[in-house]
Image (cartoon, rainbow, N blue to C red; front, side, top):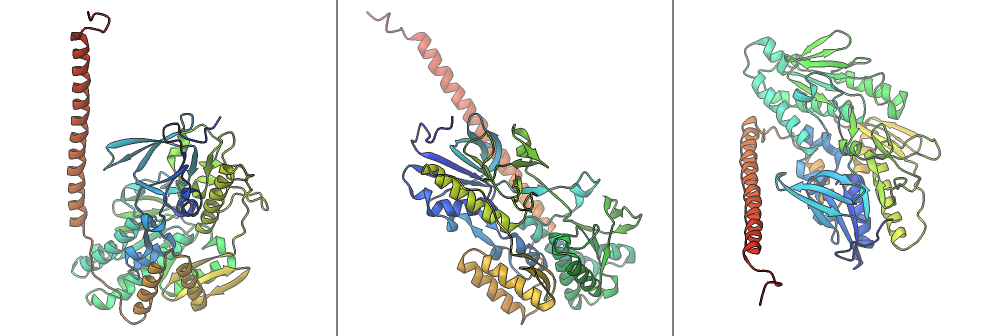
Length: 475
């Protein structure tokens, strides 16, 4: 039996796990509705204190946008929702509480809930391929995009003064694995950044730059064969090598080994070939489908009242096709909003409604002023597809301030060359690691001292109780 209020606060506790599209949309809806009530408390737990607009990550990787322009601070998106920045460590469905760590991971807090929204998203899946997890770059977080841009520029700098032709060739070879939206948009961004920067690196021969896309059976299969073929032809014309039907089998000794036998010497492999749901979901006794939590049509987890799942970590079945909805941002947004509506309905004692949604279309950018789109069954490509991509995503970007900043940056981009400053170096990363390690050690010492002090206080109280007479012994 689920308790509608927490016994200590006498408030209904609604906890949202995850600061991605689904989690933030759930929080924003509840911020306008249930969170305004005096008997309800809504808490959003996120690893970061901002939400990232991931469709524009490739623009950061190419240097067309600055990192802050595609991020929105969570505290500016909601007013009545409590924000907790931390790492989720465990979910106890029986005790109805969530354990999280914060303060560089050494301080632990347990948070009770009456309603729990699972919006944990997904993580990069390296498929157990040797060397990939250890040495490849990702393209899923803001740090991934920033590191990728910094590395491309660093390699151009190094190659411009490298006398050894073999080492220079390896430096100037960039490999991307994955033929979906992330892989195609990333390879287009890298190709633009590397080739358009070459006029400023006079000692680098443009013929030495090699950009390779290791794809599966087809390019952008989500958009259909025609647009996939167009994308392949357009990338090839822009000097991107496409290896269809090939897979990465190892990334070792400074080279990518492919399933077709080719060995590609390179310092850069970007992995965009797979994701998997949060591993936290595996430790809880509920039905999973390919690692995702199975939910009923209302997005509630069966036999677990008050627990809802949305976004990439939920297996939500489309009632029309009988197949799971794809893990896209537009589905995550709608699912998060719908889960919030159903929570509000439950609080009011009303009937919850099933989730249905038909996506109007999908879009992708494949390089400088070129894109592809399929909207309401209509297909667009080239400059028209690129304009549609920018228009749609600019409108979807949260907050007017960010829309104006991005629009202005795009306008300036049409006039000026891209910035080639390498504002993040390996020395910066090493220095940050040292600072973090020192902070962890200090926090650990504080925690240990706190435990020792608490133990000493307990021992002192116990000793006093033994020395003092009981009330029964007093005269």
